[in-house]
Image (cartoon, rainbow, N blue to C red; front, top):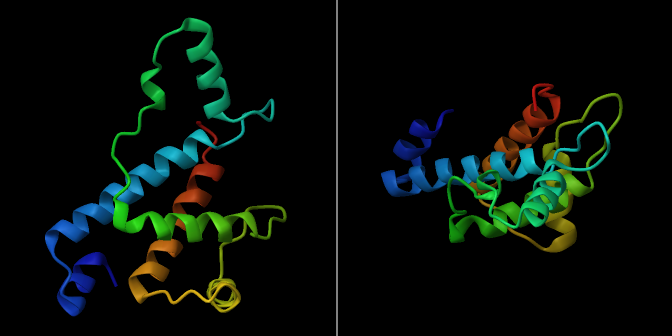
Length: 134
């Protein structure tokens, strides 16, 4: 079901939908910066070092959107789940079982929207990691 379906079923307003859109844009930006280059260092590391060397602000380090404050906890949960992710020949998706285990172990109660947001963040992470153009 798309976000428009949630809007109808769960009474989510336009403001909340826009906040989730900003959240995913912010997340993609952060995940791209955390992607390692061939030398093993992240894009963020290279840009921050360039910023220090040039003694000026590098625009590529400025997020296009701010993270909505009411979704910071979802980002934190995603980062914990991502850190425990299984990686084999490719980056494996975070499963619903892993989310359920995380919630039980940490005594977290997630809404359906929060679980769906984590699954979307997971898809964004895998797309970023599999994109060879970055």
